Image 1 (cartoon, rainbow, N blue to C red):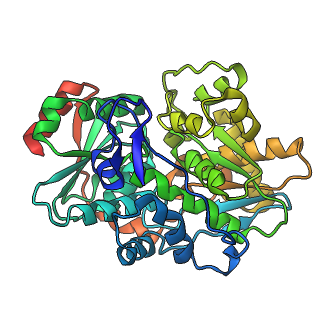
Image 2: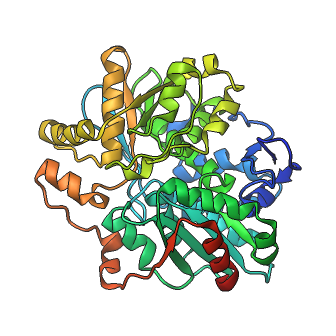
Image 3: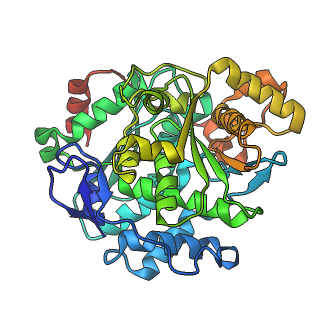
Length: 432
């Protein structure tokens, strides 16, 4: 499999090159030159397959010729060695829980897969690699955990000061070793812009061997397809599910749409957004316009200009009308998000995090006018990551899961920095 830039101004590259480069020299996102189709009989037999067999079959075409089957099987096994349960909430709605990994968030899968791929590609390389990533919440913690202690790799994470939850910040700032947290006085969009500038700065990239671990990186983005296969494997109804995804940078839902294009049965996709509504506005008007990010209680989705939406458009031939046939989008306010957490816990004793609440409400809203459909939403983070709002709405004191209890004893280590690219550049040259 080869990958081309969606800006079409850079050479076609291999999977390993796309993984190591992160972003194309022309600032475009890499995209596979062809979309592999699932093997004949795969879907009919999916309930008889193991998670490892599914993961290997789905990912093999994307790394073909670059990672031996035995190595890929090991990478997949280590990536998905936790549960992905589909939990029934009522007769129409189920929750796909993606928070059972080591950092309590869906991004564990992409970060673990990428770290192992990069480790394999760098096994004979003496040059140090610096993973540079911006996070609005969970990406940084998953990347930090995935790369912690990897020889020859330094990880630099930019996060917006005061705009991530306490548990999220602990996962960014209390690991030490090869993990460096830069606390930026600004928004996630500021962090992301600084990271993008770094990758196209020729002076910097001559001095520092950079790669990205945001969902712009194909090795982070592509394995997110696996969630949707594991959901379908557990789906108990004859009709394909409506799938609702809490969406910020749109990498997760884009991976789901890629799985659908490859042959996975999905009836409809719903992008559940918070007040950052660039995509819902586009679907309504046909005009895409990025916006300044707005801070919300579902902070991992506080993205005003989602990078991965360009990939979604590519999957639909850049046609607004084609996209409308398969994608619905809602923008949900903070008051509705809080109310949803409270009511779902009261009625079903199911505890939502704010991102899951946005998705639950959007799916419930959609099903009100599609009564013959059933759906699932992605619960992307453990409620403990958002204790203020969840405890307030449910009146339940949340216990810290054992996966992160050890962080409570570690000191915070972060470097304060303005939202200024030149400051970032100077720090990277001096420290990486």
